[in-house]
Length: 251
Image 1 (cartoon, one colour):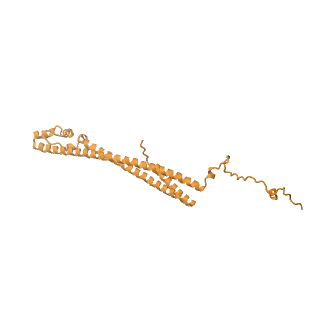
Image 2 (image 1 turned 90 degrees about the vertical axis):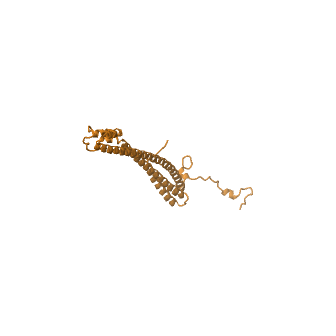
Image 3 (image 1 turned 30 degrees about the vertical axis):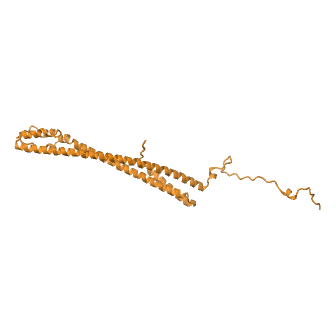
C-alpha cells in the first residue's frame, strides 16, 4: 500500500467544504428595503403599552379641561348670586318705599274723611294740599265735584286704576327687581350644577387614570386587557357626558 508523502495535504483538508453565508428568511411582512415594519418591532405587549399611554394622555387632558370648566362655572355662580342679592336688596328697598307711601296715603285719607264728616272745610282742604303727588290725581278723580258738606262718594280712591298707575310705580319696580333676583338665582343654581357635573367628569377620569396605570404594572395580558377595556369604557362615558355639558371659554 502506497504511503502518503509528507508533502501531501492532510485528508481532513480534502473533506472540508467551503462554508456558505447563512441568510435569514425574508418575512412577508418585511418592507422591500429590508427594514422591519412596525408590526415586527411591536409585539402584543408593546401595543398594550402604547394604548395605555395614549389613554393616560387623553384622560389627563380631560381632567385638566374639567377642572378649568368647574372653575369657570364657579365664577359664573358667584357673579349670579351677587346679582341676585343686589337685586333682592333693591327690591326690598323699593317695596319698603311703596308700603310707606301707602301708609301715608291711607293715614291722610282717613284724616280727610273725619274732617269732611265734621264739615271742617279748612282742615280738609289742608289735608288735600298735603297729599302725595302719586295719590292726589286718584283722590281728585274719586272726589270729583263733591264739596265739603255734600255726600261723600262711594268707594275709595285706592280702588281706582289711576292710583295703581301713579302710586304703584314703586311696587311695580320692586316686583321687577324680585323677578330679576329670581332669574339670577336660577342662573347661579344652574352654574353650580354645571360645575358639579364637570367635577364628576374629573372623578371619572381619575378612575380611568387609576385602572390604566395599574394595568401597566401587571404581567398577565388578559388582566391587563380587561382593565384597559374597563378604563376605556369609563373614558368614553365620561367624555360623552362632558360633551353634553355647556362649555364656558373665557378669552
